[in-house]
Length: 286
Ligand SMILES: [Zn+2]
Image (cartoon, rainbow, N blue to C red; front, side, top):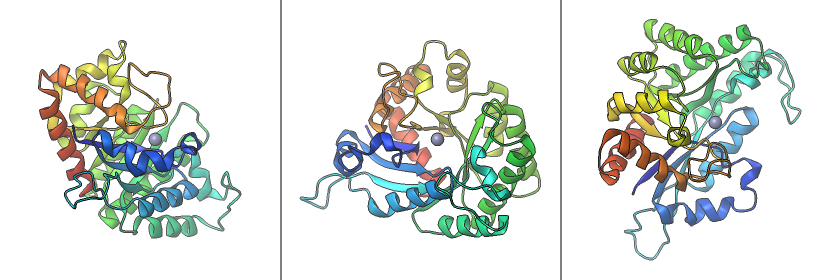
């Protein structure tokens, strides 16, 4: 089964003990050919870029001979809604402070321009924790979508308790002629909104939640949307699927996500996996 993890956080300290073992072979041994590591802050985006540099090039096929299989890592570079204060003069978690928003944007642009960066993400809105005011989150979500358009990169979107506003801002950007394509990560909205995203050409990120018994709406979304618009993800170390719910997640568990999608689509899991894999490659252009 070929696996593409479109949203992960291997720079998280939860992987400090076995990051190299996982990315250097354990994941590939179970079919994980590509992972995209998301940056969520200036430091996170830099860490993502470093990981992508270190693990450039998937050799999961291993047709080159003796070399062991290894997962290819790409980076997403963006500022998560919780961290958008950095654009407004706030200090980052590691104590970096920028003199103006332009300086932050320039730093982010430089990271996004790296060859291994395949999207601007994760960006979006989070009204659950409300670390920054709505206006601040919205302003920098808009600006980062503009950056993505300028660089011709897709976006990877985080949306929590903000489904309608996230959609409205993406549609506004689309209607103003700045379509970027990309993924609505860990989708948790309605079927109606999902259909509207798909109409605009955005993809829907499906992770461990689809295996949860109580995920009725998401199961319906997966059942009803064309498979061509779904992609797989972990958001690891978070959101392990059943039967590992609550444990640390990694990209190998996407197998259970694919099996759940295949059941909802009444398809053969291998065939389903192949389509999901190609969808992700198409979105990120790898
Ligand atoms: Zn994430």
